[in-house]
Image (tube, rainbow over the protein chains, first blue to last red):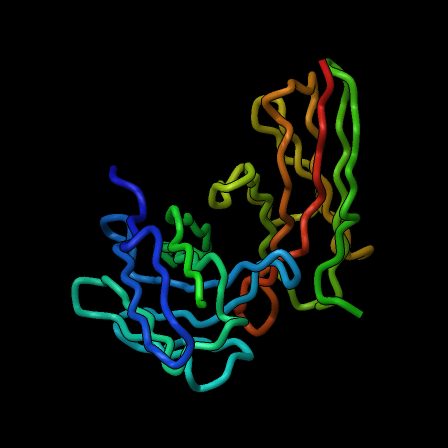
Length: 114
Length: 110
């Protein structure tokens, strides 16, 4: 089975711009979660989507948004980029069935804001 | 108090020794517990999950869970230099969010 894929892998943007990141989950997985990883804060939960609905949201400003499509692929968008948004953005997919909820991560998108 | 706490390390062990990594969590409603390994510059890789009290073994890895003490641990037997990485403890809280600790850096010396 193919793993979680994320595009693009690297991105350089300027302050004030917006960015869209994409995630394709493992085939059959309907849940996609997004995380931000920085050296100072570690892995921080952004949001989770399941069957096109946002199930959970972390403590991030409204500039961070996401969506999920009917094929379970997900996108996250960050508007009005700030320098502090520079981070590794990770998405993880899980099947969310049978009471087990193991999440598998994609390779991440490294975003640099200048 | 952080939701999931780990000692940042580094934890240094010689090759062939047992590495013991520990994690405590604050939400008593937590039901699912995970250990991830992350190599520098890579994304986290799931190595163990545990859902009930006791031990769970998978190859050289053993996860231990004690819900009464709100404590999860990971033992790595016969540690190898290739095990050198950051180990992240993750807890699915009662609010159904997966919360990560900041990770423990493990260094296995030949």
